[in-house]
Length: 195
Image (cartoon, rainbow, N blue to C red):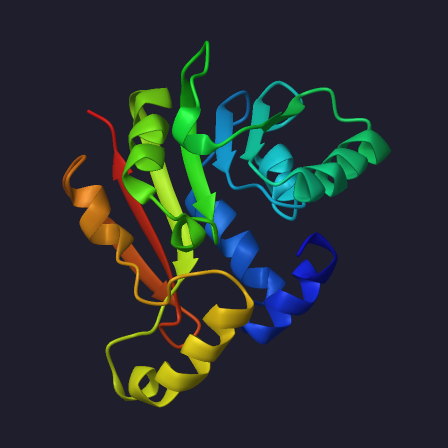
């Protein structure tokens, strides 16, 4: 899938500006540490690194070696010393130091068993840290009814659950859950803060 990742973004109507907007909504500060769960080929790494600056840290986790190989090439080309990758199933993740933000970008809906991954991400957060999920799903409106069949077809080609509801999953961790919709309500950004 790594070599077809950019084509997949076209198929799911994901403009690059939506990635930028999502990273802006993370409200990262220079010197913070951000964990991206399901970092894939590293499409968000430049945006995340820019947000935390050279004094911050970006940690990317992915279980797919092919995806991480492409992300590592990007890191090596750019010479980033504060971006590191972990090749691991995120449900087994245990970090030595807490992070300020745990971020899922189009990775949450592809997880086969979301609860353990969500729990590991929550445990990785420092008090006051933020857990943010940006993903896609079929909206509950007229457009959603029209897109139901094409979305299900796309989900058979590219992994993902078009019916995932991360805002409900996040509510078991903390309240309130902030949710914002984008791109004709096809994309959403959900977040909670750890008390």
